[in-house]
Image 1 (tube, one colour):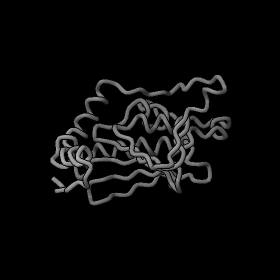
Image 2 (cartoon, rainbow, N blue to C red; image 1 turned 180 degrees about the horizontal axis):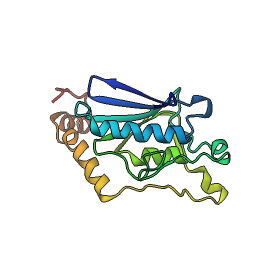
Image 3 (cartoon, rainbow, N blue to C red; image 1 turned 120 degrees about the vertical axis):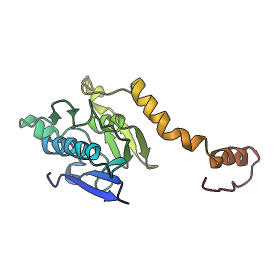
Length: 181
């Protein structure tokens, strides 16, 4: 795997996948696409891993496809997985996009390919190519399967005692009393 995609394991069960091309706002080239695809294969194959997080280095998620590399012949597509090695086929285990800074064009599509998106307050999402009459061709839109996976992941949170307490505290205009249950 190239140094353009970094892998780190947190708490033994979380695989953090970092797009590491900050000099081009983590734009995707062929090496990044292959690196992400390989990371997703690893995530699914390793029984000690339960969830993946994909993020970008140095304050930006991903600015989309590296257009300079594309013009030079690089194609950031992995057969069977699509753009960036993820857009058409993610992985079996839950995958979270941790978005900070820009998630533009293909970067936005990478985030959409994940099961959940967690965005920093200043995160910016967009499809700027449509302003130039270019279609977002590798687009991914949520399928029924993705909605079902999202519901499975977040349902325990919304059914928890803390979720009920948060709602009750809000309606009663008082601070919540969390129990972490």
